[in-house]
Image (cartoon, rainbow, N blue to C red):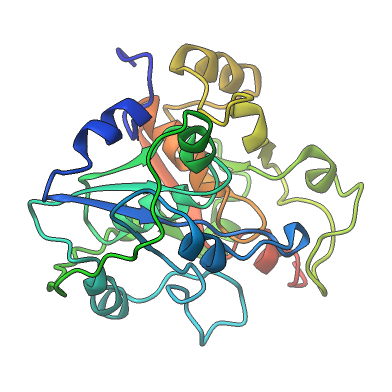
Length: 277
């Protein structure tokens, strides 16, 4: 935890300086909950960081699953990601329209499939716009390149694996949802999903980790927050949320603080809350 800033972030200053780097790949991974009534694809077509290409989270999720946003198998991901023209020399920078939200999901996916040279733009598109930096409506095309995959199975867990670790003092399950949803005080936004939480899990609302300017809080403050929540970075940590998006923000935070092992429960509460457990 030597650095004040999370290791998976880059600043708007850094990205602006790198815009003409031929090995840079910028990806807009914006995705919004239905209640926001925003179209990430339309917004991207109208305005984005120069050279960026749009990543459609739904397109890159398993269409055969009845759960939202389940990760593709490695072969499908490898095939679909070719449109971004990513090679071993590439440096990938991801951003989204909320500052730090769905961009974390794509970073985790890259890690899951074995690609590490990837970062998130701290503060995302809101900070970029606020600072009046260059934007564009032109959409860049890249030569499709083969994307070699090394699947890291330890970064994801299934329903059965989560069940098996209940009650273990070596594993902690951490839920990124707002406290009201975690405590079951309000209905879940998805039909057929009950309210509540996984037994023994800890609530760490992702919103408490983000500054008002949409940047991630410094490492020392993040460490204080997770210490107060009773989270032990020496234990195996499993992150969860509603549908596997904000759980990946916790993945980035924990990994950035030197956690020994962090996995994402891909089905998250959407799966757990729809089963009779």
